[in-house]
Image 1 (spheres, one colour):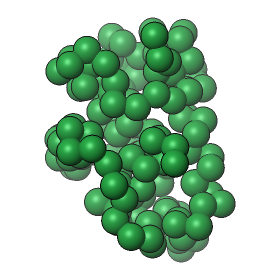
Image 2 (tube, one colour; image 1 turned 45 degrees about the horizontal axis):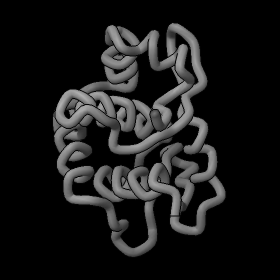
Image 3 (cartoon, one colour; image 1 turned 120 degrees about the vertical axis):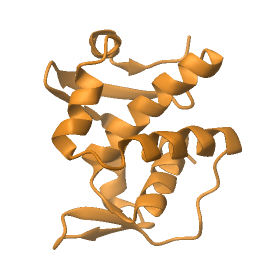
Length: 131
């Protein structure tokens, strides 16, 4: 199974009902944290965007996923399958990022990412790619 989806499942499971917008920001922040820690991202994925925002291309697959229920009332996704299995290191990084951004609004969370010095490079490379 695609690692981006497994990690996204974990994020959704941890946060309950979440929009792909927030998942994408958490993924980017987790990758930057992992690069700082051990020199490489926890997961590779494509990014499309511009100065004010972006999306993670692979997250579009979640809309038709059997483990995802779309909550139209709250405009979010819920994870409905067994607990997703991801590496302990990945969990540690994701949990730390979730803790750090838990009180931020969507706008504030987006600003954390797009104002980071690494954001322009992320856009120019089109995401996190294997070397």
